[in-house]
Amino acid sequence: MRVLIVEDERKTADYLRQGLTEQGCTVDVAHDGIDGQHLAVHYDFDVIVLDAMLPGLDGFEVLRSLRAVKGTPVIMLTARDGVEDRVKGLQGGADDYLVKPFSFIELLARLQALTRRGRAQEPTLLRVGELQVDLIGRKVHRGGQRIDLTAKEFALVALLARRQGEILSKTTIAELVWDMNFDSNTNVVEVAIKRLRGKIDVPFAQPLLHTIRGMGYVLEERGTG
Image: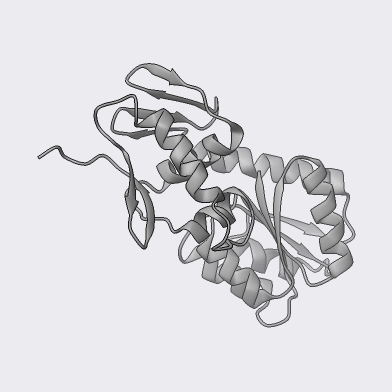
């Protein structure tokens, strides 16, 4: 589960990051509304934990910007327990609401419930030509043949399949698959692409994973003519 935490109280953010990481989540953190808005709008997360009171932009503004472009599940946090704030968040598109202080166990249970709900609304079997990517079973087949992938290879092909037809830069891939800032001296993306291509393309007649020189990589079916 990839989680974005937008929280200006650093102790709270660090506590949540540590707890969620220990649960096997990949966690990104923003400490103000401007950075939170950028990450929420431009990157894909399974769920977002969004504080209502933030510097730069408040959580309600971040939520408004997010809802204009995508439906990522959001749980809002606030130190206030007033009904008006809760109503404002829910009417603005929040999926759930927790008042500080809260139990981490309760937050985790709510995040898992929101993630399941969000996944139920998305396709769980992606197809690119004869390639099939099962997001729930974490299995990949092409032409009826099972393709064995490592965890990172599966994350890579799932990302490319979700955004098939879209050219993804090395920087985007590095951030979304490895949770790292891309270093031009690091060839981790090229190596992973080469290995993935050797498994999903090389044994078959029609290539699906294409390199766009100077731009990045794209997964798509192209005509033979």
